[in-house]
Image (cartoon, one colour):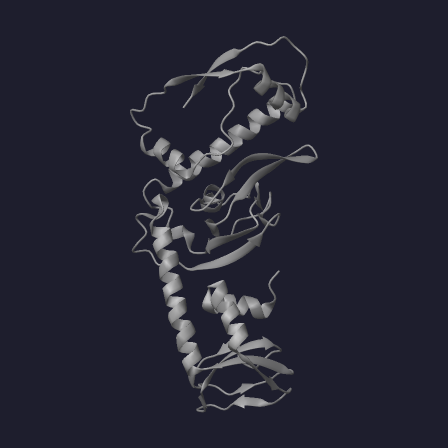
Length: 301
């Protein structure tokens, strides 16, 4: 969990590597309670980020240049400071990083029409087993996976069922976020490390072509898969009922939405032998001994 100082740096520089660089090259400057740091009209030659304490101005950093108001310490304070040359170096790195993130977002099909939309975003880091969203929470930001993989889980009885997984380039909570619904699934980090782009001003995106249609299609797929899995575990369905794949790539959903008009459903014959059936039933806790045989069923694509 990030502390207040780390959150300030993250909001200023965005890139986790730039944040680490700032922490490494900056020096600590201490001030005592009631000490005046700057008077109105003074010139500040350093970029100063408040590490701890509180000051009279409602700001977490003091930029380089003329100071517009008198700044006084309300408690003992510590600032991390860098000089102008170091600040320019980090600022250039921030611009390059922001361009890299925007190029990545604009390369995604859901953001293909958003090149003229200004996006306010933040990068968040996650580790294996860490949750980025829980059931019954409200989504305040649109979450796009920049790196790593996440599990989609939903509670059933006293345990969780893995409904699927999402990876780089996929939006986690597009339907709940844009529709103002509470989160219906838990999203858990599956890889050792992962990064998510949090977009706050997502409301300007919902008018884009096919954005809401794709979001609804993915959401309905997850709910349908969850229902089938719970029905199977509770013994309320026939084994011949087809299973959906555990992973539904974003491109498949987009193709399904964009080609929905005039698209024909093609039945595909799939053969499942007794060994596969046994593994599935053991995993679901419904295994019963029986004669070896093959079953055919039709899976609608």
